[in-house]
Image (cartoon, rainbow, N blue to C red; front, side):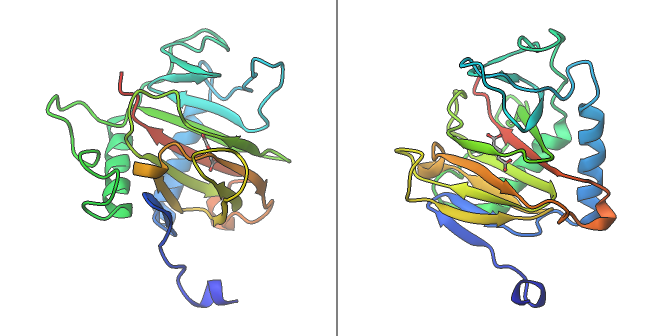
Length: 227
Ligand SMILES: O=C(O)CCC(=O)C(=O)O
């Protein structure tokens, strides 16, 4: 299979939206997975997200730094056990900055100054949403628009591969591009693509690297709150 014989190329999917295959090596994936497992434990652990219309999201979620609920942010799990959200670790902020630096070329839309620590010395990335997909879980087309910052969104994948649908900024409909995200892949979207609709219509069960020891898919999405 070509994909196994040749390294998958880095691809610009839209201006400011870049897929970097195999960005996390096997060890980094294992370490991130171990951290996700700790974050998933209650209090403020993995939860089912309920939407205002009475539906539920099939991917379960845990947040760090700021708690996301449909449709806003809070410091406590306002739609769950009410406890304070777990802290966002500095190392994860560093990972986010490095991801932006590696994915977006210098001077590309959305880069500056999001790959640098701000003058306050506070980590720039301060929100993580960790989504866990098992069974038939998927995620509908949506925009990440509850932040007060236009810093790029950083997305890291672990476990099963999936179809990641990256669309346009106008509507959930076409045109969109389907990208296969595998364990260790990085996807960054900023600049003119920051508010593009995106979603996960399909996860391929049983495709995780066996040595990782994860059944299902985890996605770690890093964002800047701007708060
Ligand atoms: O799981 C993914 O790759 C996408 C996650 C996502 O779109 C989100 O958390 O807003």
